[in-house]
Amino acid sequence: MKIFQKFPEKTWLIFSILTLSITLFSIKCGSASDGNDRIGFPFPFYEYFGGKRSIPMENRRSFHAIYLFFNLLIYFGLAYFFSILIKKNKK
Image (cartoon, rainbow, N blue to C red):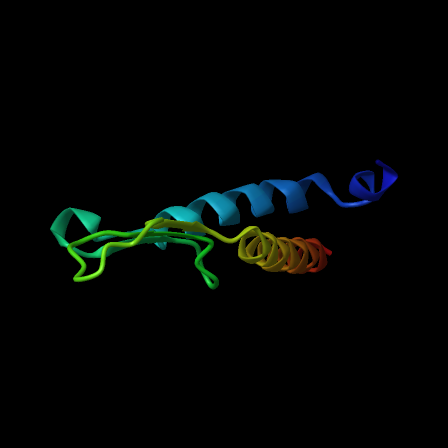
């Protein structure tokens, strides 16, 4: 895995912090009050459709792995950008 060794450690730290904080702050939990749950920003990768429906749904849960991949790709791009900015500002 030489590809991962080329990135600075700060990039991985910023990536972890970004991923956790954005995911935690973007959680919408509305199923307790007849709403929907949604996790993920900018693309919601997990949804739970709660509440009463006139036509009951077979599957109330929805997970989109491709949206999770896009979110992680965006977070990594931001982390790499921020680590470059930090490196330039130290010089």
